[in-house]
Amino acid sequence: DAGVIQSPRHEVTEMGQEVTLRCKPISGHDYLFWYRQTMMRGLELLIYFNNNVPIDDSGMPEDRFSAKMPNASFSTLKIQPSEPRDSAVYFCASSLSGTALNEQFFGPGTRLTVL
Amino acid sequence: GQNIDQPTEMTATEGAIVQINCTYQTSGFNGLFWYQQHAGEAPTFLSYNVLDGLEEKGRFSSFLSRSKGYSYLLLKELQMKDSASYLCAPDGDNYGQNFVFGPGTRLSVLP
Image: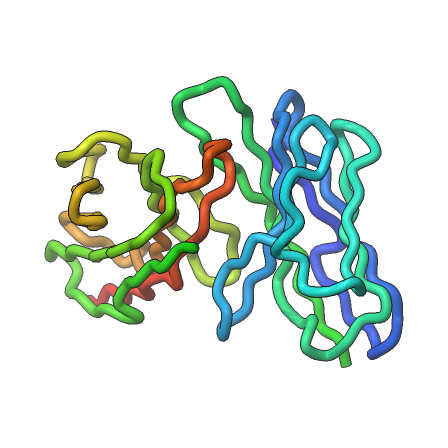
């Protein structure tokens, strides 16, 4: 398996622009997570899905952020409009339920810079 | 809510042993994860403790005390490639799928 795939790997945009980050989880995994990592705040959970349904979005910073999972193999995280404080590395992770170990597998991340 | 505490930075010498501590307070608890994250890379799984005690896996061991809200990661025979951040993550959600990562401990291994 190729693991969790994220695109783009790097994104540089200007304040006010729309940004869309993409994720393909490991095939067969039923949980998908979006995280944001900064030096100041560490690794923060934004939202997670189970079987394509959002379960907990309490970590989403504000209405400018939205996430969708239209099918089991694809999810997007959208920021509109983007702001400089959104600059961070965004990770997507997936896991498989039904096992004693709920290990999450992380994608390589998208490094977002908002100018 | 959850409160997780780890030392910010640690330094050790190649070949030595280092212990990275993690204390936590969570509203629920299923188990505790340790993840390793090299600079510029994604976190990768190291261990998961559910029961009290020490679990050994090669050069790495992880300890858990549920009653004390305490865990540590023990790294033996340190190698340069062990220089990384180490994140503890108590699994405190009722669903068992949502866990909060600690701030991480940045370990530097010196020759």
